[in-house]
Image (cartoon, rainbow, N blue to C red; front, side, top):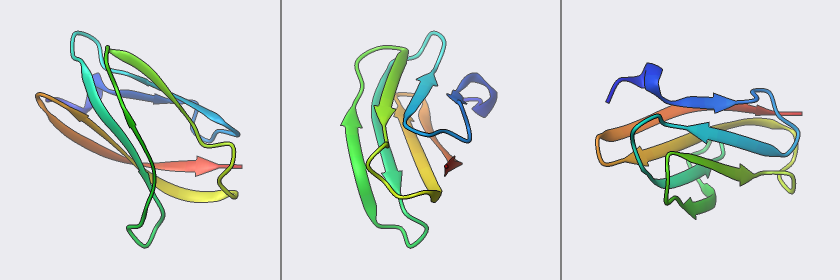
Length: 79
């Protein structure tokens, strides 16, 4: 999977994070703190999905998007 095909926006965010993977189904979205602890996990079922991180404190996180073609991990900023 080419990383440029996965879009994670808006970044920074205040609550809702959109994940788009044209022509690929999202299997799982995970949000981790910077210590690698899983804070939030959600199953996907299409090529556009959202995850709400409003309850998390402001800071930097890692978002992991899993598809059949592979996994992308990106930094995510919450303000």
